[in-house]
Length: 431
Ligand code: GUN
Ligand code: ZN
Image (cartoon, rainbow, N blue to C red; front, side, top):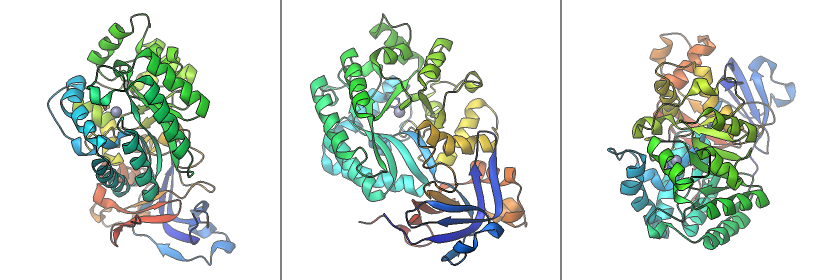
């Protein structure tokens, strides 16, 4: 993919860590022909050699594209189905919905709208569950490739305690997963595979082990759910009586490592946090989903001082929205207070990228990284007559985190390519 090199002039807000962000009110960002950031800094410091590039002045603030560490494509049309806790919600709403993905036309229609939804929300990288269907997963990869987004995507694996139509023998799961990895993992630098055992209640020990073997042999990611609800945790202890904890079940199967993304983990005991830390497995915190299903409160203070990487996930469809600003705000509401906007911005961008082992590729605006960027409009009433460039860093971050809506996402670039222009044609994904 080549792009015409260019420069953007805009206020730039970019995370550096969970406690710091860089704010450059008079910023400039130049992109090279391969879609990488050549320069990001003060406009006044723009190197002479870049001064002649085509230049565009933006009205909004430039931030990194958002990173969604956990979401379900086949649940896109199933958001907001209220009334029950996790296990009933899966039985009543989710399994019947995912069964529809046996139909390729359904799979393609939803995948197109889902990727458009991500783009419109300013999300440029996402870790995504497909359904159990190999064909639907193939179609999801095709649509991700068309949308040009960076995805870590995998076919769900289940072999028990779910409707027959969604379960399959271990041998079939292995054959289909291997074929998908062969076809799609690294087909382009933005398409990556995750072996996706749904969660321990619907996977036999043999399936969990087979999943771990594939991941180890092919160096792909692993994604699964962990410690989301009390009823789920009791079920796991009765299904795996010899394991000392839910996390141990995955560890004994060989599933925990630096490329493992564990969704939720909101009810771990200390030994489970120790194990996650030892194995360097990452956690996808999904606060909007936790609030919707009443799953419980993420014990943020117990992660404090530990090296466990934490990214944020929308967890659509238990999460109600693909919007990472909505998810950032939910992270604060779960804690019962406003969290510092630098911390929230970090978890939705660079922290998420690091959780996905992609921190050297995306998640912040720095020379050498992929130019994955979003322009967010900040409404003039926030600045109260001052110019955007007069805001302090914490004000700019507060506006982005606590005030922005999806309609404030004005433009989205992926690898320097403009993929969405709200004031122009909208989506620029090629047909
Ligand atoms: N646990 C197992 N499957 C799911 C799912 O689809 N959504 C959520 N939130 N939790 C799960
Ligand atoms: Zn989930």
